[in-house]
Image (cartoon, rainbow, N blue to C red):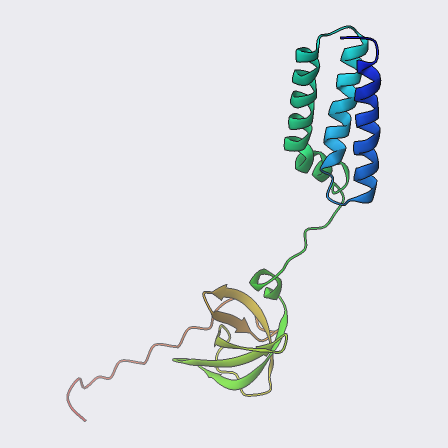
Length: 165
């Protein structure tokens, strides 16, 4: 190819770079870098087929690796944001329907009503509780001051007379 091939690739790189500034998404940036590499190979004397291969390989490799590149360069110090059900763990809720042992009740958290079961015994309406775990669409809650052990019911003492009362 003649001596202007590297200049055409350089113009393509500049145009693609300008498009990247105008558009969002970091897509044309990788093609601009590919065109810049093709310009360098054209300047080194590689044929048109080689230039196209370099352009394609560099652009595709950078496009494929862009998520990893941005994650490691720009997001290395970012804190993972918890959303949805994951964000409710450890949050405070208010009992709106008393939580009794066999059936549970309802709590309000983030303005929504959820079915709940108590890990710290029966809880009256209006009590503040902490979400400990989530099982499907049911929250398991406990009093904030309660220990992390579930209180089991005490066994009944055995009667001496095993007959009918």
